[in-house]
Length: 366
Image 1: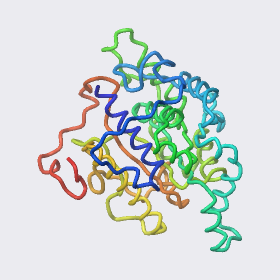
Image 2: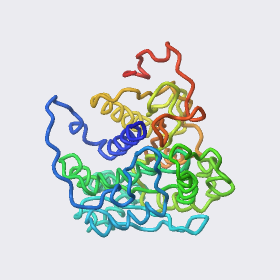
Image 3: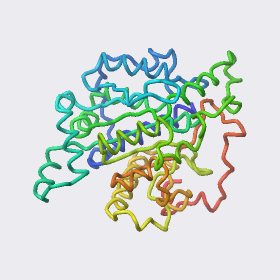
């Protein structure tokens, strides 16, 4: 199924962002290992009546919030907290996911992240000790642009994978990372999913005719607000990122993949922003290269980088680029997809030229 394929790719990218420090886990040997049984928690399909990525189905925010609370009641790997109220008065939820032992010491790990971010009064030796004691904090969001539904829907599936998985890679990620799953625009998800699902006939479902902006006042430009914090959702996000948790990786999902490709992954095109710390830029390059490397190793072509897309590191207005100015590795991916088997004409990108489809450093696996 078209949507399931793109959601699965987005899920994989999310999991990769959590496991960047463990490259050996991504190696393939040709042998197919048996997947350990999952923990007995409620699946998205059992909660919604359809699977994440099923054609012609979208879950709204109310369904997602209820499901997250259900998982919290069933799993010792997650906590659900409210970051604050949205413009329409909903609780903007964040799921904190890690091993049970890490969650038992969450305050300590949060304090370590704060100290390492601020570095006030720390010697090099003290900073290294804290880094050895602490855990990598990884932020993964979805749904900022509410019609980009792959990014919204994958968030819940990725969360399920992490709280139910029993395989060695998942367990290592849980031991070594604290993952913050955040819905970036709950009000917009509620609007878009409800509007889409209003038609009884699946083939008639669409969200091109939305009656209003999916984020009050700003619509798509909610991702230009992260240096101003005008919107309540932006205030919530910036507070958690830069006053409370200070994540080392900030992963911001989007859905506008370049023509003729599957997904854009950093590094970005030149010129790079010389105002940023070089280690932030090389760290971003390393994370992006690892993500693409893993997709290629798993036989998933179509990933592109660098000049294949117009994204740069110059504007400090967006969620992921603002993170770079706080010395976090701010990652953006742009994937393709639609909640149906075949995209409508309005959802299709123009075909890529034969030259652009050729293998290159920016597109190593066409």
